[in-house]
Amino acid sequence: MPVQEQVTLLLVDDSPRYRSQLRRMVSKICPRAMIHEAGNIGEALHLTQRVAPQLVLVDIVLGEEDGIRCTRRIKALSPRRGLS
Image (cartoon, rainbow, N blue to C red; front, top):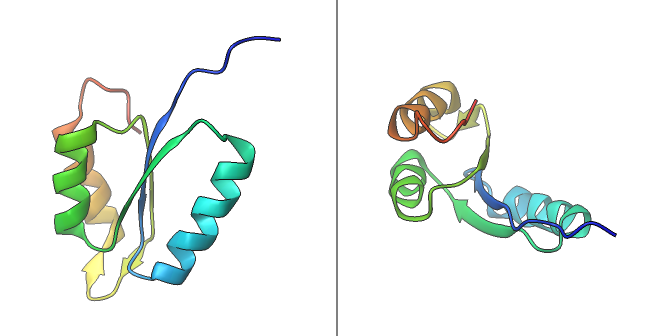
């Protein structure tokens, strides 16, 4: 059986309930994942700089904020990490 590498994941959603559900689903599929959560763009950008996520899942509508804009800002902070 191949050894699973640890993946660092960032979940960005303004709903704690949805983040919790998504965390549960991801944990079942990838139990070794390091999962970090952000409820807004500011938290997402801070965590991106701190933990260098390999995968980021972003809600399109973040309350009054724009998830597409958030994704672009995260990508700008991580251009060499292969985030897309």
